[in-house]
Image 1 (tube, rainbow, N blue to C red):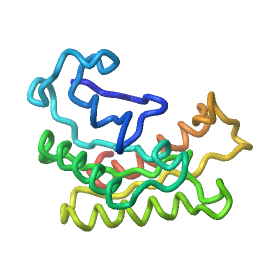
Image 2 (cartoon, rainbow, N blue to C red; image 1 turned 120 degrees about the horizontal axis):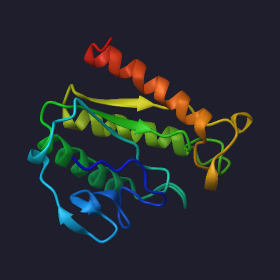
Image 3 (cartoon, rainbow, N blue to C red; image 1 turned 60 degrees about the vertical axis):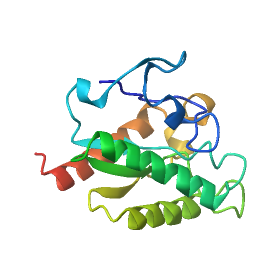
Amino acid sequence: MPTIVAWSGKKMWPDNTIPDIYNYIFPSSKSGAWSPDSGPKPQAVVINLATNDFGRGIPDENGWKSGYTQFVKKVRKNYPSALIYLATGSMMSDSWPAGAKHLTTLKNWLDSIQSSLGDSKVKRLDFSVQQESDGIGSAYHPNAVTQTKMGRVLAVALKGDLGWK
């Protein structure tokens, strides 16, 4: 089953998006379409997209929320029983640019999307904002310390929501 772990620069909407390449085994060449029926079904899917959407300012609310909602619906269609986390990534914050409140806006929009879907297995998952004191990875991406912190947050959520031990 294909899994895109990370792809720097991709967005949710309106261009250069993960939804545009989601169906491809080889997304860089947009070839090798896959079927969600071809492999095991995940118990959970984490959607951690928004940093690049907000990178040049707050995107159009209606367009962005519509694009995000359609992607969640596509994931839900492919995996009807999976828990879907709408994540706020560690690179999102309210501190840059000053006064923009990107993280607060994202949280509000994700809550709105979650509510509009009316799906009890769609939840928001908040990763803490990365700290410079932990070090910063390439191009301001999370480094191993921050990734470990994110993994712990995800593990706690999965244990609680899916009953994992």
